[in-house]
Structure formats: structure tokens, C-alpha cells
Amino acid sequence: MLKTMQKHGITLAIFAAVLTGLTALVNQLTKTTIDEQAAKQQKALFDQVIPSDFYDNNLQESCFVVQAPELGKGNHRVFIARKGDKATGAVMEATAPDGYSGAIQLLVGTDFSGTVLGTRVTEHHETPGLGDKIEVRLSDWILHFAGKIIHGEDDTAFAVKKDGGEFDQFTGATITPRAVVNAVKRAGLYAETLPSQLNQLQACEE
Image (cartoon, rainbow, N blue to C red; front, side, top):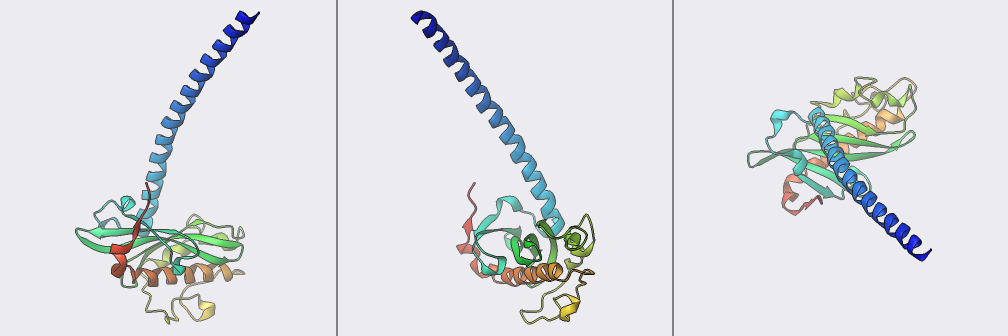
């Protein structure tokens, strides 16, 4: 009886070890594939907010972590674009905390002199059919940021039309576009301060 139990115990142990090894192997192979796909998706998103001829470095590897109130609470990643040895602009993760249904996550590309190169919403919970028009798949509204220049903190034109600015609001939904416009403006103004602090930025962890 004891020998039988020992035999079954050894068999189970071997089976568990093999299964654990296979699981680890599958996880490793899957992780590599997932990481590759995530990198491709990130690169595709970067291409939407900053022109490819604006930089020649590996933007994804030029990643820094910052804590800047202009970008929202907590840590945000900033990717510095370079052409040769010269920093030309940045792609920044930013948060609009005052969306109608909560925080709106953005990706904002700008140069260092107030010009917005592109903006995309990466996450939101706005009302379908109203606030969700900030998504490029539903409306071209978000595309109108490209090429806009922020003329300082007191630039009243960089606002929705209801506030005296140049950006359209949505019918029945002003809070959402206002939140996005203001967040992009804050991010653009923050980008103007980046050149003076490039040597002090903390690199992203691998």
C-alpha cells in the first residue's frame, strides 16, 4: 500500500513539474508576442501624434517618467523626439481629469515652442453618442489639434467656442471637449519647459 502511494506521489510530482515547465514556457512565448504587439500598437499611435520626419531616434526607447501637474496627477510618461543630437519635441501621456464621466487619458505630441503636432484619446468613459466624439473612429474633431499653436497660458483662442475659443464643442456636450482642449493646452505649455530639464529626467524602467 505504502509503495503504491509513493509511486503515485512520484508520478504526480513528475506530472506537476512537467506541467509547470510547460506553463512557464507558454507564458514566456506568449509574453514575447504580447510585448511585440504592444510595441507595434504604441508605435502606430505615436505615428498619429507626431510626424515620422520630425525625429530619427527610437521614440519608444526615449522614455522618461515625470510628475507634472500640467499632465495630471501621478506619474506620466514622456517620450522625447530627437533629430540627430537635437531634441525636437515630445509625445506626452496626459490626463484630463474633468471629463463628463471621469478622467480622459490622452496622448499629446508637440514641439517645444507651443505647436501641437497631434492628439489622440487613449481611454475615456464619456457618454456614447455625445462625448465619445473625441474618438477618431467616430469623429474628426480630435484631428483639428494638429498644427494649432498655443500662444501662452493666456491664449483665449485655445478653448472651445463657448468659452470664446476656436474649437467646436459637441451638440449637447461641452464638458468633454472643454476638458480635452484644456488638457492639451496644459500639456503643450509643459512641453515648452522640457528642454531646460532634459538632463534631469528619470528614464522609464525596462
